[in-house]
Amino acid sequence: MDTIWVEKYRPRKLKDVAGQKYIIERLSAYVKVSNVPHMIFAGPPGTGKTTSVLALSRELYGESWSQNFNELNASVL
Ligand SMILES: Nc1ncnc2c1ncn2[C@@H]1O[C@H](COP(=O)(O)OP(=O)(O)OP(=O)(O)O)[C@@H](O)[C@H]1O
Ligand SMILES: [Mg+2]
Image 1 (cartoon, rainbow, N blue to C red):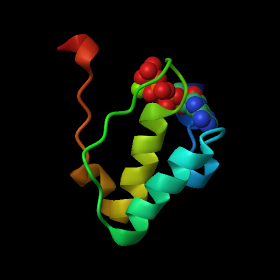
Image 2: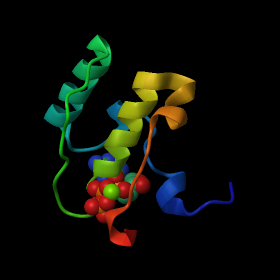
Image 3: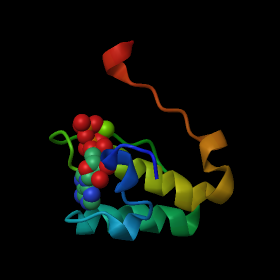
């Protein structure tokens, strides 16, 4: 696959996000009831915030996740 490793090895499923047991349990519960509150993910760089949100979106929306996901990068705005 011709892609940078940070994308290639990014976990695709919530259960594959490491070391965030309680957060992942909470996010999985939101998937189960198909109801997600507004949330802010805070923490040091590279700890899985973006990864978790992407996985949440995939699990909520399945194949149409990318049509239901809008990523804004504050560093370029
Ligand atoms: N908890 C984790 N479990 C598994 N892989 C992780 C985890 N955290 C980070 N990674 C790996 O590191 C990469 C970067 O993580 P991610 O983009 O989710 O960080 P972030 O918390 O959004 O950082 P930033 O604050 O810089 O946006 C991911 O592609 C993934 O491969
Ligand atoms: Mg991020």
